[in-house]
Length: 269
Ligand SMILES: NC(=O)c1ccc[n+]([C@@H]2O[C@H](COP(=O)([O-])OP(=O)(O)OC[C@H]3O[C@@H](n4cnc5c(N)ncnc54)[C@H](OP(=O)(O)O)[C@@H]3O)[C@@H](O)[C@H]2O)c1
Figure (tube, helix red, strand yellow):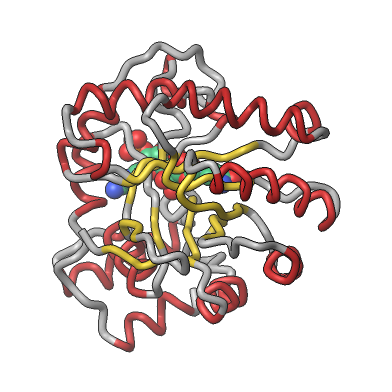
């Protein structure tokens, strides 16, 4: 596993697992929580240590359960969760604090490695208000790092200019066909780690075919080519799979380097 150093000195694995349908009936985002930990235990077995969850996913307790069942030292894991932007969660400081407290209890792993604002709120001032609550929980030692998700450049810049603890990371949609290169470049030049979601799910068939051809040179699949490309760009990736074969494929991306020409092709898809 490769690790990146964040702007606060802590390290984050370059690759982790998404979980938004884990521990749920029928692998359905809106399915009933069934506390089934088999997908996550299989990922942990294969070497995944970064686990991405959120209050919205309703499965934080399943994540905590799987980590405990793994019997691996909690310190080896990097757990990310997120506070939703919707009014019912964030319209008052009390609500935000209560939901974060509840989320810490649900995960039940002593502390959270990274807490994100899941989406920006209506205004920059509202973003600052919620972010300051995250800062206060860092001060209490219950969260190690804080950051954001789905923030654009303008929202990120405002945050950087007005907060005490700089966000360590921005998680956003990024995949060949929609890299969001300006946002990646802005993050990299401001020492904020760009983290990609939907690396795999959103690819067009046409792009998959091009990436499959590239992959043949390296004896890798299209998904391995995408994830390797993103990690090489300084991004953290969080592919999610219910299939152990895919989980294995997605973590086996650290033993090759795409040549300049192939990187150029992927960048311009
Ligand atoms: N911050 C946000 O707003 C936000 C939004 C969306 C998602 N996320 C996070 O990002 C994570 C990843 O996003 P995602 O789950 O939507 O999409 P994803 O990881 O890009 O793709 C998941 C889909 O790709 C398939 N897949 C995985 N590996 C594969 C492989 N090697 N070959 C072929 N197909 C493969 C999976 O099916 P199988 O199960 O059959 O393998 C699944 O259908 C989420 O789980 C969540 O933690 C965050």
